[in-house]
Image 1: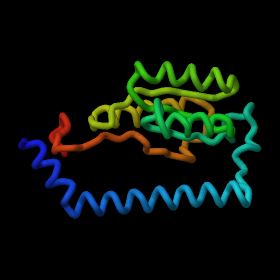
Image 2: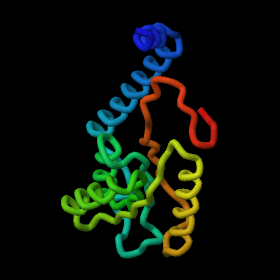
Image 3: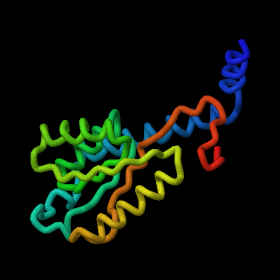
Image 4: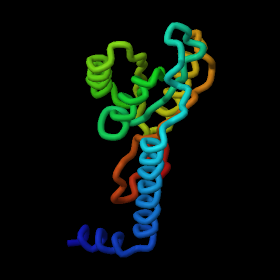
Length: 164
């Protein structure tokens, strides 16, 4: 009963409604942009990238790329010629990598394990990504970052480091 009261209190709060309103506005804006691109066409130059020259291949980092929007984004960008870097838990990454490769055998993919609820894991991911970029012949910048990973926060849950 206490959980029900807490859930009801949260649903009635201004924070919940503000979050719901802005989330829906952002979604509608994104859908409008996609519709506009599909009607009027896209002048994207990413599809003309040379796949043999890594220094000109755009790099995209996607967190939470093993399901839903993250996975769909990874599929789409791999078809557009991006080198897609995926971040998520290791047991889910291998399946996603094989799914993408099955549909697009020319996909350029790299996977790193990361847990967004731990600062230590995020810093390790950043360091590993930087090292990988330095060791490869890619340009040392990321052209697109898709922060798709998320959690459903129903209550306060501090990280290992003590942050909410």
